[in-house]
Image (cartoon, rainbow, N blue to C red; front, side, top):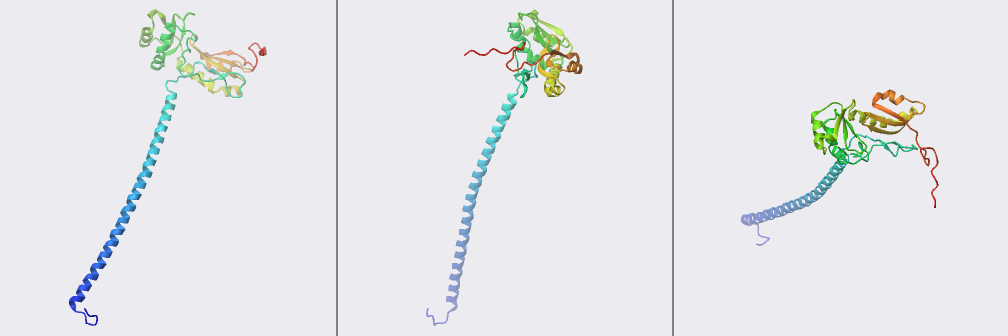
Length: 266
């Protein structure tokens, strides 16, 4: 077409159509490019979020599992522990002699000491069951004879089910007898724990608590204490459930009779 020639209507319409198609194509390309960019950014961002939150969730889950494990261990650390029957130990800081401390749980020597006979072993095996099932009846136990061939189980009243359980556990039905006393084991352990927990209060009153033990035969809590200028104060507060044994602390390097320990020979 000659540029000097006036445009014809058909050529003008053709050029306008071509320009419109080109403009539409450019817009479509721009929109597709922007959409592709958004998709890529969204995909990368989603992957990053998934990785970050997934890692965080894993870490949180691991931490929770560890915490539950520690809690279970701690809980399990203290599983079956009983109130103290013998509370003597190394003592509190700053105290020159013995001071009460809670013994390990499940002390198998609490009733019979070093005695180990079929009868004492049989009762030791069922004692946790007796104490847990009959807390308002069970009071303690002791060896009837020095050899430990017979044991006595102390109760606050006769209970056929308790006595049947213990009797059937014995090598022979005649190896056990049941003695009725006034105080349950739970009562005595509560008093023993209270005395131990309040030893600083007793010290402020001039009384040094040295050791606290159970005496099932006498149905009492035995408190070894240096009462100083306040004799009778503990018994006055607790009554016949407590028996105080006057004692004095042994100074470091001294024997109970007050003599000095001999020098070690090189």
